[in-house]
Image (cartoon, rainbow, N blue to C red; front, side):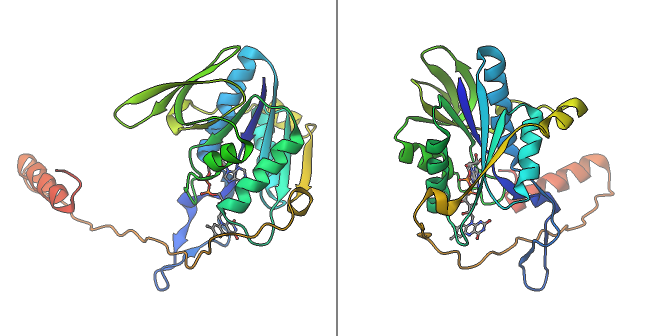
Length: 253
Ligand SMILES: Cc1cc2nc3c(=O)[nH]c(=O)nc-3n(C[C@H](O)[C@H](O)[C@H](O)COP(=O)(O)OP(=O)(O)OC[C@H]3O[C@@H](n4cnc5c(N)ncnc54)[C@H](O)[C@@H]3O)c2cc1C
């Protein structure tokens, strides 16, 4: 099995603060990490490789420092990495085209794994667009995957229900967070990752000057405030007041 994992470097949104006066997110100094669900995609790739053998290649479109994030996935179990430096301006159209061109350059593949969405922009567009550009089938929102010789079967998470879906190879699968628990690499694996290759490509070498199709007009943060309501009355009375308050807020129906 030749498996490709698309993994995005994102800012750690849990560490992000919003400027209360401008309502704009403060992005400077916020730590970077691999998007959480892409680690689930990576874990699933490792499980498939452990059972069926093969090679795992991680592809990231991002700035030079994303190399350090790729090393984390190499430590988890990927065999090699590909880092594509993005053009100055990019959107979902540009990103999915760059991923498609990079993957065509990598060569043969059986399975492409993506997260269902990135944890920062969360558009869920890159995977389905990529499958379209490569002209291969896709299974989205997979909450479990069973790989056989000639076909892959996956349960698609539909909230209250799941749809069991089957596909031939090559196939692109987007995974959900529920699919697995990503492993933590050992110290030996972290040290060993330094010897694994990371090939670098530029956007210009892959495509002829793609321009974004949509324009981002504004990025606004959503600030959350605590109401600091403390219920000190008798326990039954407090529960009843809490339930009433939650119902008023629309949390309970
Ligand atoms: C108009 C516009 C302008 C933008 N300008 C910028 C900008 O200047 N700088 C900037 O950082 N972002 C910019 N973005 C955001 C960037 O285009 C998106 O992050 C990117 O298109 C992927 O979309 P997403 O994050 O919603 O990923 P999703 O579509 O939600 O991601 C789904 C999955 O696709 C894969 N994937 C997504 N992105 C990557 C990646 N980069 N590398 C590898 N795999 C990936 C992962 O498996 C991920 O889990 C812009 C977006 C728009 C709409």
